[in-house]
Length: 579
Image 1 (cartoon, rainbow, N blue to C red):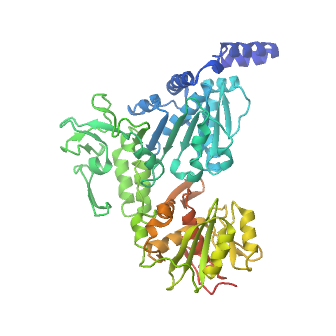
Image 2 (image 1 turned 30 degrees about the vertical axis):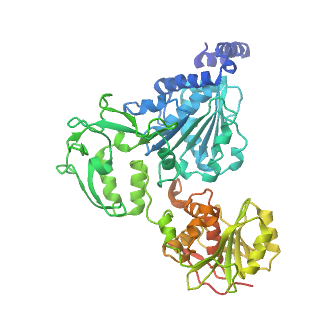
Image 3 (image 1 turned 60 degrees about the horizontal axis):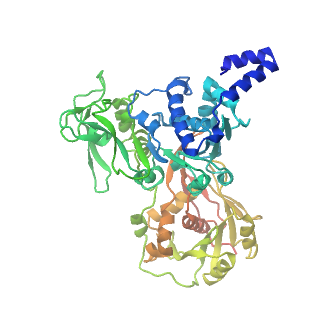
């Protein structure tokens, strides 16, 4: 079979030689179209291991390092459903790239999802295009490809293909059929679009789904998926007492005391003899007998993956920097000291370095927080006092109506779902709504029509600008549009709840058959890191009631006053609503 060097010689010799070389390659290729799906899957495993061990180069031009004994079993896993809850920089991104290229080389189509369109572009440019150029085997497979597309979105290799999409581009979730779906950085993806990923695999004979990412909150995203898996942990056997245990920073490195909410109240290094001037690393200790334990134990008799919930269909892997030979314990301890007392840094330390979920205070709503907002009243059927209204438009219109019995308080008078604009207009009359905010997208035509059928200045259409930050909320009175920073207005609405200034009826937990609480808890506040710096965002999902509450919050403060963002929070003077 012709080598890449021979192909270059053939090109130099002229078209006739080149044609013969290309014909030789295609004649020697396996007849992919004759393989069954199970045969393609088996071929993908063989190819994956070959790529990883013999061909793949990372962005630095270096071969993959399998010195960590826990990594190779992940490459060999043939489960059709896989979950990887991981820390940063332990080789899982390279695994996903190798998996993608091997699947394509085996004749399969891969649907690879990243959080956003811009993240997709950076990822493909730096993590995919570089090895495709540097690795001769990959260049050969691209030359052999059926299809000549080579873009940020689509790569052809041999008889297969890989599509790279952003989770914020829903059209791509309804146009592509695939055999393998990979969702990278799950927690940072648009959760409402992610639910459509299984639809891309409906025609596959042997579908594979891989979910991966750094965790953020418990019961959310990758952590929720991991809890539903067989929950594999890399465990080490103590040389003294033979107790099997996973390496836990807060059990094997630190001795900690926690308060009744689980927050760490005090801590001390178990390795009391270690000093910063020491030439050795901080030691780890058995959480049962207290003996020194080797966190990098490689003997298969004393270290292995063990499933906490064996028998489940999904294989789940949780990966910490404590498992990596490229990480020192002293560096983790330094990061812990830097994060101690700072909720933001603590979240980054636990999420990104330990690969564990952690929710800083105020970053996610809970049943307990919502229950604290309940008061002893039932929602009335109408109101004579001035009210505000928030509407999130979808298949149904999710609605929140409030009055203000005390300064700074919103009291829920109506929480529900309606079948379109006419019932909403009737509610506005019954509840004496003076200011209403409705989302401008995606149902732009319906929102405009609803707005036009009511007195000018009563209904405003809300838009979230595409810019990462907006210093001032902009009101366009002529168009009836208000633009605001999404994170800031959600922060303000959340602050109402945390400060118990958002009153809910006594039966709030059962509203919409429990769906109200569920949707209020969907958004999570997470820290995004990009080339332009760090910023907080609230995740998206099936959160229509939460957005209705946010729009109602905005309606309560925009009655003609400028609304400004000050240090990440909202302040406003609230005059009488416009008529």
